Amino acid sequence: MLGSGSRGNSTLLVSENTRILVDAGFSGRQLALRMESLGIGADSIDAVILTHEHSDHTRGAGVFARRHGTPVYLTAGTRDVCADLFRGSEDLRFYSPSRAFEVGDLRIFPFLTAHDAVDPVAVTVEGLHCGTRIGVATDLGRPTTGIRHSLAGCDFLILEANHDEALLRTGPYPPSVQARIASSHGHLSNHAAADFIGELVHSRLTGILLAHLSAQCNDPSLALEVVGTALERVGWTGWLQVAPQDEPTPLVDIHLLRETTGPAQLSLL
Image 1 (cartoon, helix red, strand yellow):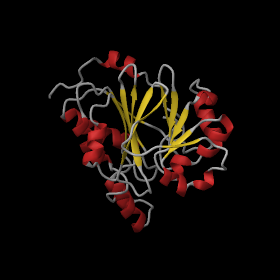
Image 2: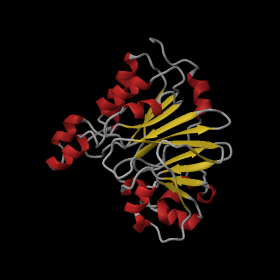
Image 3: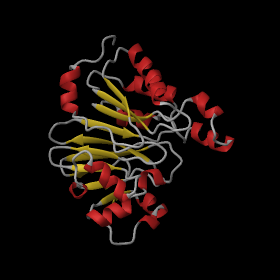
Image 4: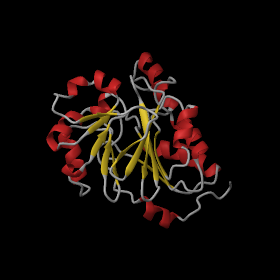
């Protein structure tokens, strides 16, 4: 992840032949700088895929598309409500939730989520040659049956653990904002994320990256403790980390991670 939180979200996925960004919630310049720090040139990105219109997911999409000639994939509804990001010269490509599309050797499956946006989706991304599947779901008010189905069987999960319930209640947000965050169309708490991840655990799940942590109403160590404890209860011992807001995570090689953590992470199930 190039960064994740209320001030910006963007995920870089790299296969043998294809490089994509899921969301572009930083300025065009920041997106390029953060990729360069990982040794990835901005001109090498094959597509930007937007999941919904909120600025912490779309801020740099228009500038990045114009500057680097990168196609932007989004729903028509998302385009309509963030039209001011685009000037007409961009290569906009529209997708429909629940209909897969391909970019290079990656297959992207977008699916509807429960979030307070016009057309909110999350995605799973599958390598056409290797079969590895990554789930990216950073804005979930609640895990629906459709979301559960779409994220089942992933080799790697990027899932939000937005807030701690107690810190949200005692934090700086007014009651109306607290209610929105905690609602069924807001964000997952640490405990809600832990419960949901527990449902998604299977023997091939190699790593989990917790994302979209609130700077005011959460703490990385707290999120790791809550989710890690829940995973220990179901016997999962894979790779678990938190995505920071202000810097990218190191690139994670999922195949290498599987080799170093072993083929079976479930000791109790």
